[in-house]
Image (cartoon, rainbow, N blue to C red; front, side, top):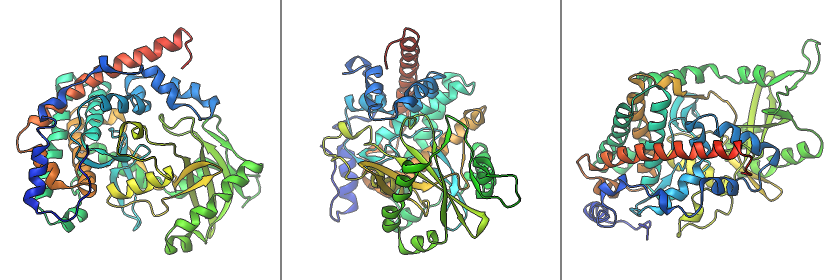
Length: 443
């Protein structure tokens, strides 16, 4: 049973409600992992998650996952969802990022043009037990630490710093006016080297750069119109009926935008359409890019129209109902957790398939694993904890969460142990995937 949304309740009662949840799941219990209780193998879960995807890209997805344990982890959210569902749950519900890991935070342009750094991938977002996000982040920090040359003791310390910062900030939020929590800014981000690097990348990722990177002139004549340049399999032009269907999806998308966004979009005309392969977990889903031109060839806008199936967590949440529209689920989950979101964020459909719409590469920059060498891992882990705390505080109740977490290190130490155990299990699962490919098993 989960803590439901409630009418106004005195603060002391809400804190007590969180404390009472410790009887349901003690904080030290979060160190547990039960791989022997799995109901399906990781290979079966991954194969199931690929149903309905573009079959010609399935091989590519598994090739990307087979490259490294962290690469496997990025594509294995369905496996971790099943593993988390086996474990006892606090029932304290928040909006989950759903795929909280070190590379799913990044820099992007806010509606006012300023660069911000926040959680920035919400394909798996759903309302569920708050600790699921933290456990996925903990495992990712361990794996990222190993990939960037850290010993396990240092990586585990970084996990504990991440969760400790989450707990400390949640206690701060519990003592703040609710409006101030909603407005809270994390000010020290630019001083953390991996974040600084991502912000520098984002500053360079202007629409003109994307225009030169993704498109080419149709002829050698000066001022010739541009179109997407093909770089198969990652980028392929789409024409004919398929392109017409993609462009037709802009009509329902336009209708759901706020009037001021509709007005801004009216200054742009679509020029070309392409199919783009993105990420690891999303490989095989239908992902289209539309190139728009506004006030001349130098005024480019790129929208991404990305297929969104159900969240990997849906089947494991008894109180969750399948979203009426999964693009809307992602957009609303993103707005719930982010301080500022893409002004063109929205949703649409193409036939029976549901899509998220957002800007492509507009001042975006991400953190690479090699950026986390040395002391950068611990500093960045604290940022991850702070941003998850802010996202959960915005979409849940900081008093309930603070009541559960308490004032000591019990919870952060338990998550440190869990992160190490799950990183070990991920490496075993990765090896199983590599063996299954070598012996030719169908995945």
